[in-house]
Structures are given as structure tokens and as C-alpha cells.
Image 1: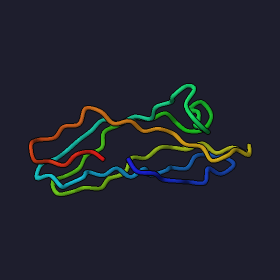
Image 2: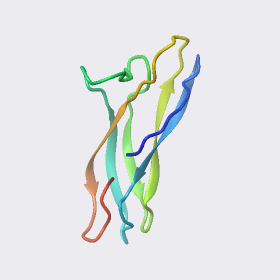
Image 3: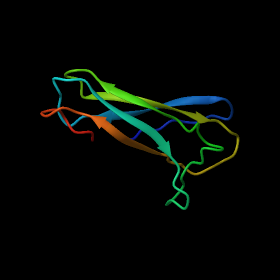
Length: 104
């Protein structure tokens, strides 16, 4: 996954689109499962799914020849001043055939 930023706002939710890329195009469809992951005791200002974003999971799909997609995570707004926070997106169970790209 790449990095993305969004201003959370004081109320409601806003979607942040996290870029995901393949290192090379594939002639076949490539899919991977993904989920947000909270790392208790993680470094720095990690966002908390209880307060800061909606824990989410799904499947990202790259059609033949595609190398770029995004996954969407809802960030929760609040009126509390906080430092910049981050969350982790993990990928697993990728389906790739020989000669396809690698998840980056």
C-alpha cells in the first residue's frame, strides 16, 4: 500500500483512499484480501479504530493490465486536537498466476 492523508473534520466521516499498486501488470486478474490492523503498543500516533476510523476489510481486484487501485477507509471526525495519526492496512491471500506482478 501507499500513503494517503485526509483532514478528518469535526463531525461525521470522510473516506481516505489508500493507493495499492502491483509492481508489474498481469495478463490475469489479481486479487488480495485486505484489512485495517490495530497494533496495540504500536509506535507513534497510531489511530484507534474505536475513536478514529472504522475498522474495515475487503478485497482489492486488479483487472488484466491494471497496476493501480485504491482501498477506502472511513475516518471519523471529532473536535479534539490531535497530532497526525496513522493506521495500518495489511494484505493477505493474494491470488496471482505465474508471470503476474507482485503486491507493493
